[in-house]
Image (cartoon, rainbow, N blue to C red; front, side, top):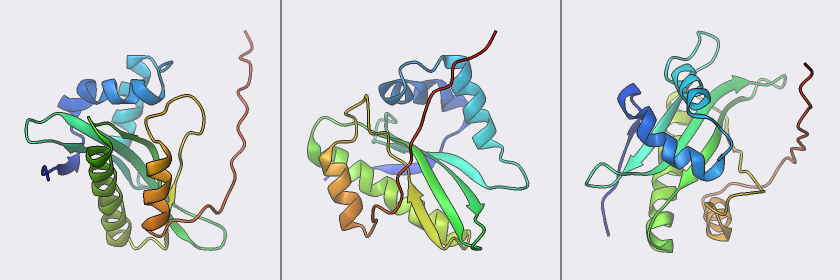
Length: 157
């Protein structure tokens, strides 16, 4: 089984990580990704957040997840994971990368005294996360609890 390293994304690797981001958000321009990444790498005092990547032995990025923390009206402190991207040459490698990311997110949530983890998955477009990802999330104790409906708004000139 290959070993993977997980670590925070550093500013010098933002461009390399963009290749993975394009797999799930091909419409996002590089400058928008750079802005987003810089904001997550330097979170505000109100929230904590970041981006973690999984690398193989050669330093290639095989997985990425961004996250923030927030509190709800019910005083539930939640780590919200989004932009979850996993690549690999086979199902087994993708599963290993996903489990590495999920384990890191649980550790981060625990270290920030979160009560819950929320994982947001895109349901249209990319097939980067397939049914195996859903199965692994369920096996790791995650449950489908919310539905999120989204509508793109037309920009007004």
